[in-house]
Length: 586
Image 1 (cartoon, helix red, strand yellow):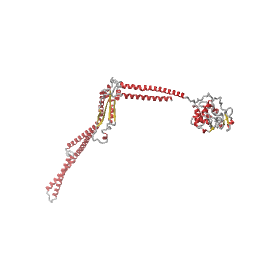
Image 2 (cartoon, one colour):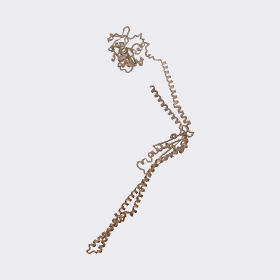
Image 3 (cartoon, helix red, strand yellow):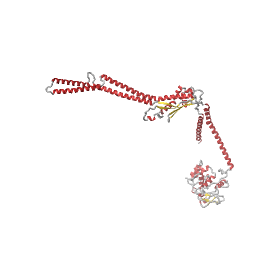
Image 4 (tube, helix red, strand yellow):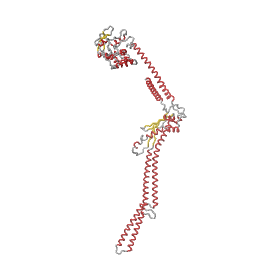
């Protein structure tokens, strides 16, 4: 069971608390014996006085300190010289008390012990020095281990023997077996292990110490600067010097030929629709430009250049430095890697211009390489649209040829029907026959009128009547024959209606084929116009010209770049080493 200690707080007014405490700590134990325990009868009397001297003279009055309930008598009394006035705790500021405690020179272990004892007694302290101040006001000496151990019950003493014994032993405070000694700071002997007094050094000693510190700092700084310069010289300056020597003394001068060209599209007049908005702009040829750029940087272009001019043999000459020289037995991959480094091709999408830079060890060879690559680009541009144009024209030509052949077949069918039926124009034949039938019917009608007129006489002329009747019968037979010839065949020949139907079908097919032939011809012309629109042209903006001064290497720029690269590598390694060192040390 843990019982919170309670005691009234007293404050003894002193002229100089720091000097008083230092003088009390400097007295030997023999001259200032430990304070005697007060009489229990007097300790219980609030008005009785306690004696702290051997002759029994009265130093201060005994008051209730709140420890009687725990079996601790006269706890919390503070000794004061005769005539000293006892004041209330709020009459002295806590800052002055903490300043006095700081002047005592307490060690960190003592302050931590005081903080733990304050926490054990449920005293809310803002700092270690405030814990010492509040414990002393409560009449508890935080540095008297014997007094603290005497306040514990016998069964709590073994638990306080190991580790942080004082803190663990406070958990088992028992008032029945507590010691009744006055819990006040005791006078220490001269040979006690106390912190050294705060002796103010002289100005000469302080200047000497400051000078030694400055010399040590300067010595360490010089050593660190020397190590830093050594590392920089080894990792940065030396590689930079080697790179600069290569660029200035060993590197073979290279000549670059620059060329600019643009790919244009044929702009046909009268082009409408959305396609006409982008016709003739870089948007219409951007894909072709990118394709040509990719081809000029491909292995195929390098192999063609090697077959036509000898790209590998040019860079395999002995007078080229080893860093840029190709071995005689080098592979195509090594040559292609060198080709990509020495041939730079860029495309500007805003202007649609392809910029090419070809580097060689000789200016004339550089111009030859550029002209060969330009010819390859022209061939590639032609091949890009050749298949499209051929497909468009081939389809139009096949449609026209088929329509023309079908027209000829339909015309031949009409001719065969005319020859077979013996009819040139069935419409004309039909009109002629119908005209004859109409004429004969008029005559027949006239004969019938004449016959009726003859029969109306009382005594008609029989000869005339018989002649008229014969004419009528003959006209009827002729009309019937003509009509039967229109719908029925005569003598194994087809009827005129059949001939007319067949000829009309053949003529309709002929007209259809002629219309299709006309449309095919129009399609062929349209395909030819579209094919002309797909034609691409490579127009030169800047022609290749042989330079008269070396373009590469750029000695100063390359040396500065090497310095920056080595500096960055050193910085990264330094940061990595510092982080690893910090992690290992932590």
